[in-house]
Length: 99
Image 1 (cartoon, rainbow, N blue to C red):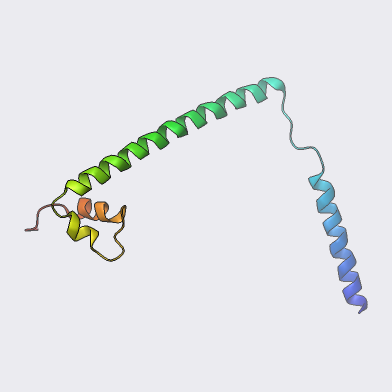
Image 2: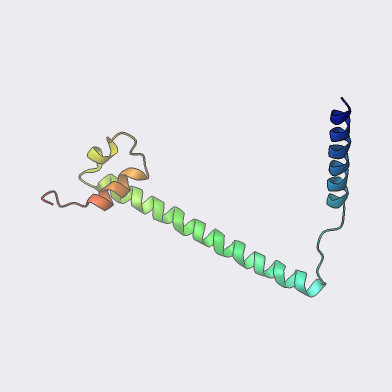
């Protein structure tokens, strides 16, 4: 019983120390650094949005081309071949059935 109480007090002390450390001020930077990093972050977000739009356009084009492909029903009918895997299988296996 005494051992449980000692362990409990130690855990309570560790928890209290963690809580106190979390309440300390976080890292701070001067205004120039903050402004520069903010501008950099905005540029990164803009780049990610552009890339997201490009990927969405690519997905639409792949879906369009796959729907027009002669082997689309075959590859779409494969178990587990969804809207992403089936077009990839067509691309990997190709159109040449003699291979």
